[in-house]
Amino acid sequence: MAICGTPALWCVIVAPLLVAFIASIVSIVVLFSAALYPQAQAFIAIPIGSGWAWLIAVLLTIVESAVAPLVVFLLMFSCVQDKIFMVVFAAATNNMGKMDVRTFTLNMEAEQC
Image 1: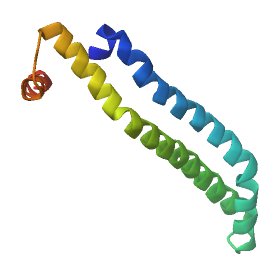
Image 2 (image 1 turned 45 degrees about the vertical axis):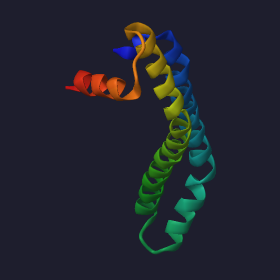
Image 3 (image 1 turned 90 degrees about the vertical axis):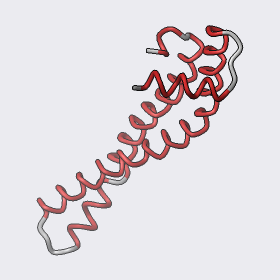
């Protein structure tokens, strides 16, 4: 795996993952403490029954707590994609001598097969 052999990639890849993990924990805590009860009360106002209202509110809160970190991760990872490419490209050119972009992409396609 390329990340194990390239310590420069560790902080570039681990940082967005760590931020996404922290964002998921925070969103779970915040949504279950702030959004669950109002959603349940809104569903209780609809005559569907108290049990169903709480079940739907919990399921919606779980979905909301999954979507929020996903958005954070996609935004964070899109910012570092170019940086990851440049670190991998620099590691490949240092290990294989001078190489142009076309040769690099051909080597990367060959390694994926």
